[in-house]
Picture 1 (cartoon, rainbow, N blue to C red):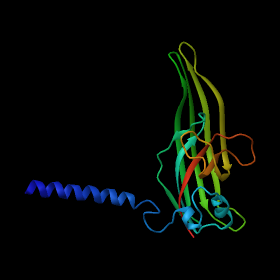
Picture 2 (spheres, rainbow, N blue to C red):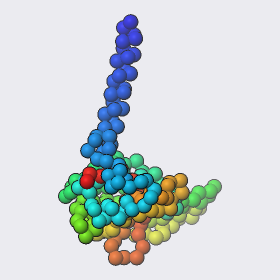
Picture 3 (cartoon, helix red, strand yellow):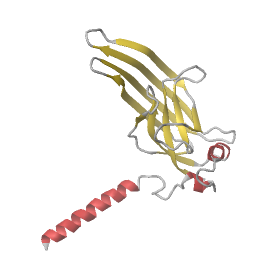
Picture 4 (cartoon, one colour):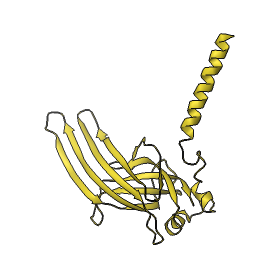
Amino acid sequence: MKKVFLFLFTLLLAVGIVACKDSDNAIASGDFKEPYEAYGLKKGEGGLSEALYYKPPKAIAFQPFLLQAFKPEGVALEIEEFALDKGDQATLSIDEEIVYSKDNNRMSTGYVTAEVEITFNPNKEGTLFQVNNEVASKMVHQRTGYPDRTQGEKSYQGETIYQIAQVDVPGFPSAEPYLIFVLGQKGQAGNAGLILCRITGVKR
């Protein structure tokens, strides 16, 4: 009997822990609504980007899930969801080592580090965020018997841009608009990559 009770107690405790974890999600907490639902749109019919820009929410939740740099398919990110009310600021940190190509005696590896400072400050002119970043990226080529060769070193510091747009990424739905932070400097050609985020909830 004691063993059965102990098993049930352990099971309930585990379920409780999972439930607590789920409640960290903005929508699960009840404070946020799914973006399409919040704006009265059907999923996949379009119009969400425009709604967010011209009828900005009071709060937004998003989760970075992919770094698109060096490889077109991108690199999966394990970063917790951000939930920001107006005036809130958050910092998104990236430190990734991406093997671009590899064979028996050669390997090319891309490196990206970034600190992205995001302030949610929506207005009716269509601005949602102010974004600053500090970024460094490079590609290192290694070949057996030869010294390492570094290529395409870039570093940026200052204001950058964001977009809400549909992006073609292998393995992910292209009809869904993503929140995208560009790693680079506003007004300069080229960048060090893109951070794609799912918009997980809004408060109207």
